[in-house]
Length: 255
Ligand SMILES: O=C(O)[C@@H](O)C(=O)CO
Ligand SMILES: [Mg+2]
Image 1 (cartoon, rainbow, N blue to C red):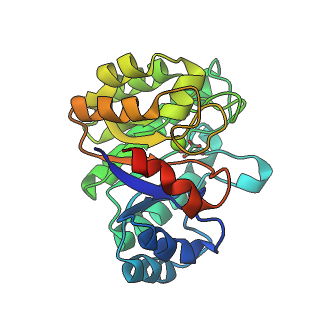
Image 2 (spheres, rainbow, N blue to C red):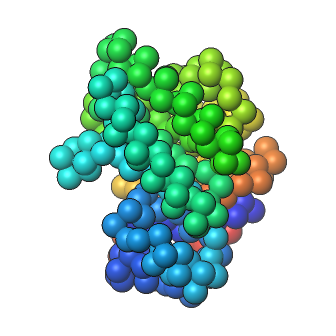
């Protein structure tokens, strides 16, 4: 059975962010992930993590101004200086929290925009090299067009091509089963084909993005497939609980 990590951005929203570490531990998790820790100083996040005794397995680089609709700025060739500041900041948090991997969002731009694609590719190479020196993996995640309209990286084939072209051993795929199913389907064959380049997996029901086992896929069969393929990483539970987070965790009894 793959190891499970609670996503603290979506789960345990009954309590403020820093209290979610302890809430996850109390619910039996020894690993967590989240989108962004940057609203809180590193020492506060670090204390919450250490007090709860959980491992942080993933978070994202700053995405630009999220409230203005930005979803990464790597696609903008004229914002490299700002982007480098974000990379420094993410590395700072990652090192304090001992996080082994970071997700870098691409940004909103048409995939036909050659300058956006070139900028994204350049930033991926640069970030992979910087993170590699620090012993971290860099992840890229295709996002479905319904949840993230206009996002550049909206295709698993594009992600696999980028990883092959850039040939950085620490540049890997963030395989979110929810996005995969909405974008392309064929989840099992895609896991088989891309597991060697996959650095992290995330799971939620489709289409509502609720608890595993409540949607159109057999999420338990998918978890067994990950076992069969020898996946040893974590599966991030990036779902919005349909009701109370802890009550909703009863799906784990079926594992
Ligand atoms: O799937 C998602 O939405 C996240 O993993 C993410 O990093 C971008 O929002
Ligand atoms: Mg995801």
